[in-house]
Image (cartoon, rainbow, N blue to C red; front, side, top):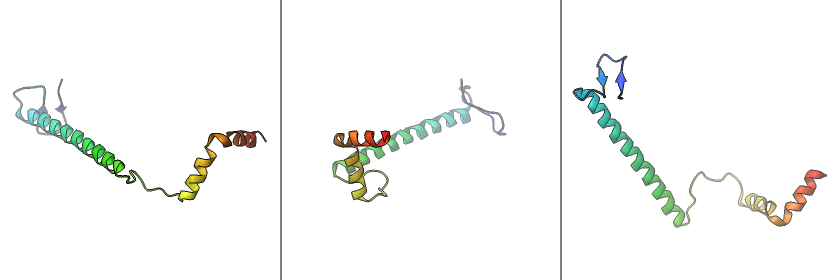
Amino acid sequence: MGVRNLADPVKVDSADPADVVGQLVVLLALFAQMERTYTTERAAHARAVAAAHGRHVGRPSLLDPTVLAYAAHLRAPATRWLRSWLRLG
C-alpha cells in the first residue's frame, strides 16, 4: 500500500519501486516525522529542565496567588464537611 496522488498532473505512486518521485515523497515524509519526534523530545526536555530549576512551566496564571491559596484551602480535607453542609442547606 502506498501513497497515490490522483489530482496532481505529476503522477506520484509510492508503492511502485520504480517511481522516483514516489520514493522521494516517502523519504521526505520520513524526515518530517523524524523532525517532529525530535521537536517533541526537545520541548519535553526543556520543560523538565525549567521545572527542575523552579521555573513555571506552561501558561501564566491569571489568578492572584492569594485566590489560589484560598482555593487550595477550600479543597483541604478539614473543610469538606462545610462544603457538603453548604450544598445541603
